[in-house]
Length: 213
Length: 299
Image (cartoon, rainbow over all chains, first blue to last red; front, side, top):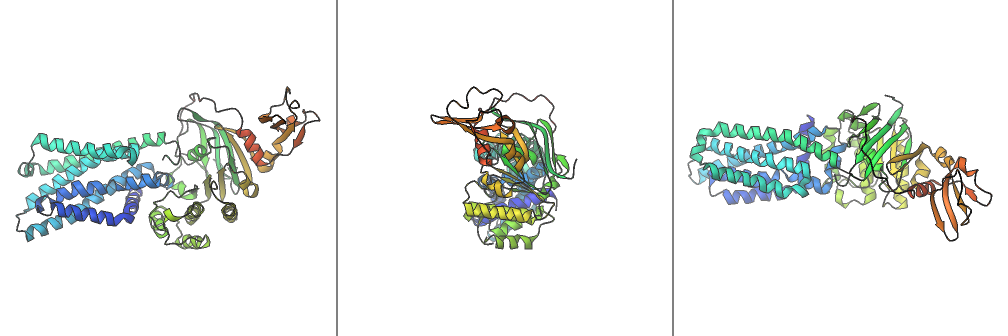
């Protein structure tokens, strides 16, 4: 296992004691969007995944895990990339479970849910999620969860809602741009990871002692 | 780089914020010994440890850690265990989960040793980190460090807040750790009594500077505590009174041993304890404003 993968696993372990809360959030999201199977996946990603992915930052802030990251035999770069790999894993897990649930609900409710619509929803979910994480993670890495969470959560939502409002995107119009939407998400995600490494370096320079880590 | 040294700092300087800097910090610890890093709160002990681990960039000088120049390869941290007075772990982890979380990072992790140490320390595997007392948290971190077979233990103020029994236990644990000649310990503290039992070397830190470093006996031999009447210790030439405490009944201060001979016969001269040395050095002039360090950044 690479150092980045080990760090992603550590993020999973970090939130593992709180799995009941995570399952509750997942169930609540399903209840909210279950009536519209087509929108279940983007809804789950926007509400559930976007809350779970930064959850390790919240626990880390409370527990002083920055000190742990500092003494583990891994490079800082791997710590940062580990958070991003964790975010990808959260998306993949949500997408897998969400897709299966959406198809099941669509079948049960006799809602038409074709392959192209599914692909569009997957691409839309990935794009909104990647923009969300791309803005949120560098802020959390630079300022920590306590100081950065308000900006980190509101800014991406404003960007996503503003973009959807300005471009008047609909499911039908997006079907022609599936690949582009997915690639844009990937590029934004990768650029954010690179930016986060710089943000982390700046934060490390400004850390004064163990406890403010 | 010398393989006989657990670590060495040579001319290290680092500006920390606006009001503090390490300046020309130089000291070293031979492998197989315990060094006490002694200084008041804010003297720079934690900053030195952070520099040693490569967690803080230095502006001047160089640092050697276990034969490697810092910043060293990240893998080298497998050989270093860090123990603070609290556990920097998720509070809701049980001690079994601590092992599950950390084991992937350490190829030499010994799970049987971890469980054996927890058992020896009286720690329940099912206990949660947040429910451990300070002393138990510290023991947990020692168990973690010994389970990944660290060669160098760095303790940062481990005994602040511990009762005497727990401090005595810690001394015993460190003694056992040092049975292996390849093991070394750096022990930062302002409670000097701990070092009377386990310290081989002592480094005195004050305002980001090293005041003196050497074996414990050398440090004790280097100073004398002097006491005199209100006029006995005033107007002396060639004698620096370190951390002089003046009361209406007299004055007490620390002087360098070679300067003690210059004092008059009315002055009482005594061998100091480590605590007396630390107290008087800590009472010296207030922290100076740092100036920018001129030489190039190397770490």
